[in-house]
Length: 114
Image (cartoon, rainbow, N blue to C red; front, side, top):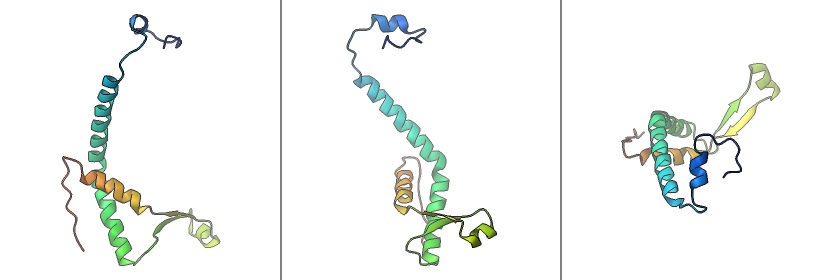
């Protein structure tokens, strides 16, 4: 660690540390922090995830689609020329995020059934 030349305030502490340090307590604290961050983020995006999940389900059902996709183009003229970008909708990924939101301890998900 001392090969890093830009240490400022902690350099003396690092010099006094033992050669081997126990990192598991640090990893456990980091895992807790990351879990809290993930839960906060899921809470923040949850309304949008639920809305997308519901609307995508309605759209696929209404038009009886097997492989829905998003088609992007810059103008009608470019569309007519075939200059389009096609992106398949990954419903497994959407469902995975939806399930993460659903499992959040402070979010109650109630879906409107068609």
